[in-house]
Image 1 (cartoon, one colour):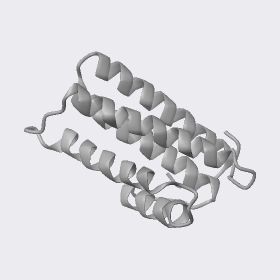
Image 2: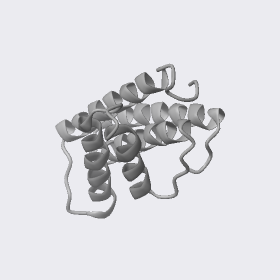
Image 3: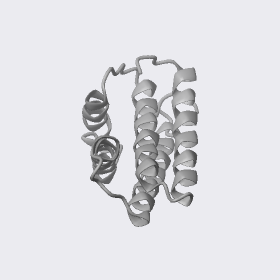
Length: 136
């Protein structure tokens, strides 16, 4: 999570896309709990790509959320709804991974996957800006 090279930006974006695709497969298979987890990691890797594009190394999941808010949401480059996506999908992933009593419906999985896709699209839009960072 600490590399800040253009190749790392591209690798994080590729991993975000691959993880989202895995979430879609899991959702279609009825494995909603696991699809929710993949949705978060798709968002997480897209967020890491954003931070790598501005050469901001990150060591923790909380650090990713804090730095995305500081450098992209507060500056207006990323809509507040995407900060909520990062926070909400992290909470859902935590429940999915650690709360055996938590249940997730197809609608829950679909909502998180759709939000993840929108987050990735927003990140791609930022990275495509003239001063957005490394190429994907």
